[in-house]
Image (cartoon, rainbow over all chains, first blue to last red; front, side):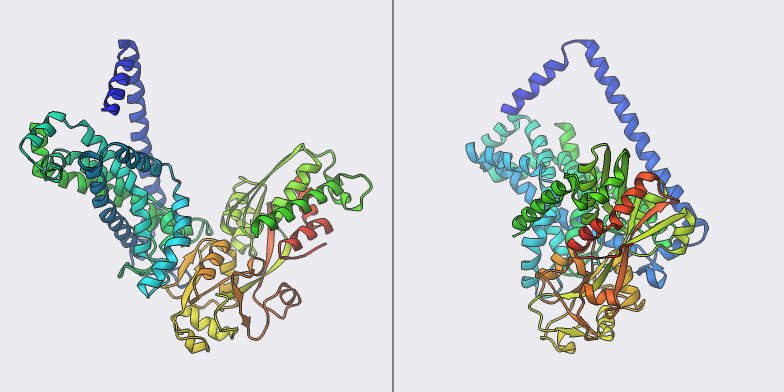
Length: 306
Length: 281
């Protein structure tokens, strides 16, 4: 309710005059154009840098499964797989947790605990990535090594836990904001029907908020796949396919960070741009996929009706 | 502990600066070359160089406030790129420049220190000595258990450095004899991260500059030779490298003064303080 009032006030503030509104429209339009141009520029720059790979017929070497620069192997497929595996795993840990937290926030927790929980999640968004990475290296890696009994503790699973912590607040806050917008009448109606809090959440609020869930998942996934520092510090960086949870893996982002400082005329350096392009495409595909699958769901139609 | 060491270092530095600023004290002599100069020096590159560069920069800036010096890291590869593209004045490398690099950018190298690269393990590891053949087999992944080299029955956890690392390059060339490293090896991005990783893991093996080795890790004897800077200097320990400053063409007067300062007895003292063996003129 509090947040609602705040929203109304800001809304009113912006409505003071039509002139200022026009200004805002213009600013937003310019901002949109700049973002769009930037993305197109990045893509074309990456493609331009990758061109030598295509023209010299080296692309097959890059799209192979072994990375051993001293032996002349420059395959980045293990890193593509590593990025995908890590971010999907992190999302599959963080997303259910975020749904649980939102359930607590909206139907179960009341009063001080509710505010405390929300404040904690908001606080989490402000913690720099490097802190998560650093704390993980000292607190999570050694116990993981002991418990798993195999590997060095720098592993896919360790990195996924740390990463899920990083993307959790993003998902929770987006989902929370969407749930806040849902008409209180809907809640009253569902309560009047005698639904328990959990049933309300499961059968009414989450289905109505499905669009928000898709957006939350896309944003969470985007953060997970784009994160460099956590995978660099915790995942172990061995250039191998993610065949088991306790194996060391390398993500595309960490790969770029590790290799970009090499001799700028080497093949390894050129392959970094292919890795960048791969990262760009993977992110784009995931966004597309999640949006598509979200649209296909029947919940969206219900939301539109509502 | 770190706090105390830091304080001691800071006090030492303070004393040092005080002495430098007193007229007539002999150590002030090396800083006199900066008199009348002004401007900015940007330094980037090798991470092993940073403590030495920072201390030297601080002394110079204290002696002559008109000079500003910035020091950044990035690794040897970054050092070459940045100085070559003219983004910084001095690009540091922990390895000699390749012929291509030197020719492409017209770089000039100034070696100022020697640093050995030691094989390190956890302090509780019972293995004290390895032959270079054993080290090669361990990193190639053919020896996978400590028991095979006289240790406990535990799998060996490999740690190596990133592609751009000067430490890795020297280790690969002089210890592994350009042999392959197993793909299962974990890759860490700095000497510091290597130390942290090995200090935590009882089954770990890795390598780091001797200047970085402290009580948290154990340097093993390589072919019976203790990896110390003294042995690195006299040639009995073979896995050594030099630390270089590189400039694009002839350095400017100010940059030349800074390089001369690093190579002066006072600069050598700073280099020694951080665990490296200075090469003086």
